[in-house]
Image (cartoon, rainbow, N blue to C red; front, side, top):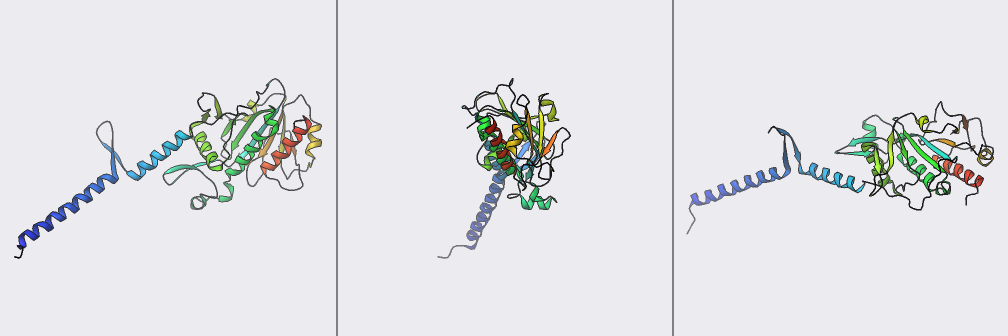
Length: 287
């Protein structure tokens, strides 16, 4: 027996209603309304955005501190030591897509070109390598490093304590720098001690009175052997070494007393620091 046409039509209607209901549910799952205290709706957010925010918040919680170097000896501030200043560091934060990131030429080349910026100038890896070379040096492990200051290309100045354990991988380092530039300080894991913090300019207010400020530039006419140069320096003065942490250009600071070049060839910031620390370790007989 053939089924009546009316029954067949009702089934199609139910099927259409179910399809519309599924679409409605799907819309409800992908859109969430934020409601203000006065009952008005502020904006709509998709679940994808909420997931991204949850992931970003979870990542921020994982970066909520950096460990101490427990084997680092305490520095005697009464004795002269060494201070490093990294100038023009390429450490800039920008909102790329839905999240804030530390800009670098490798991952954000398209973003930088769209904003009329030169990707070659965004090299935070230079600062990462330079900081690692300073903190990993036997000079620092012997307690001779008094302080490490970094000033970005935008003029943001921050301090890194000598007993900090900087992350070895660049991705982790970028996360730490992102947190520092956004929250202005980073504390030790499980402690209140601030291992990295943004401070006020100028950097000269944090330098000792009896310090000797030395800048490095390949364009300097004064070419010296680093071992011979540090041998002539006063042992009672705190030595302040100013090194550029950028891909191109040179540092220009009024407080620098002596501009020198330590090689007939252009050197990276990391290798320049290695020559400095090696010469000082030889002078102080640090093995």
